[in-house]
Length: 269
Image (cartoon, rainbow, N blue to C red; front, top):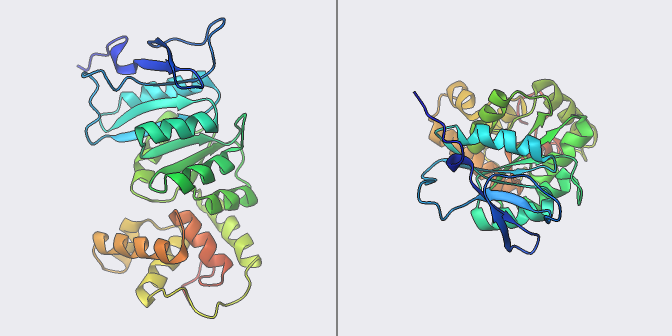
C-alpha cells in the first residue's frame, strides 16, 4: 500500500517576483501576499529527484497547476518542480531547476504560450515544451511548431493522458493528433516555395526517416519499418533536427514540408 504524506510530497517555497522567499508550505495566495509561484523546496533531503522526469507547469490557473502537480508527484518516474503564473516567472523557474518538460498554457497574462515556448527553447533548447490549448487550428499548431513545441494537448485531456504525454515528449516524440498534423502539413505544403536547390545535406536514409515522421510515425515504428535499430533511428532523427535547425520533430516535419523536402503523406523525394 502506498501512503501519501499530507504535506511533504508537495512542499513548496513561495517566491515573490524578486525571488525572495515569502512563506513556506502548500498554501494559496492570501491578502497582501505578492503573486509569485510555487516550487519544490530542494533543501528538503526527503525529496530526492534522482533520474525522474523534471516537470514545470506554466499556467495562471493555480488550482489546475496544483492538482496536476500533485498527480505528477505521485508518479515514481516524475517530480513536479513547481508552477509559474506567467512566462517570465516560468523562465526564472527553468533557470533554477532545469526541467525536462514544461507544460505551457496557451493563454498567459504576459505573453502567449507560443511566444513563451520560443523564449524557453531559445534559452533552454534541451527542454521539451507541450502546449495546452483549447484550440488546435492548423495555423496555431504551425506557429507552435516553428516555436519549437514538441506537441499540443487539448484542455480537456485527462490527467492519465497528460502523464503519458509527458513521458512520450521526454523521448523527443511529437504529440499532435493525426488529423491535425495532416492539416498542418497540408497548409505548409501550400506555402511551399518549391523544391529546394538541395535538401539541407540530408542523406537518403534521413529523408526516409523524415518522410515517416511526417506521416505521424514514432521512432520505434520507423525503426521497425526500416529494419534498423531504435538507437540508429534516433541518431538519424537527431541529425535531421540539426540539419534543419529544428528544436523538435514537429518543427522538423513542418519545415521540411514547407521547403518541399517532403510531401504530406508521401515518401521523401
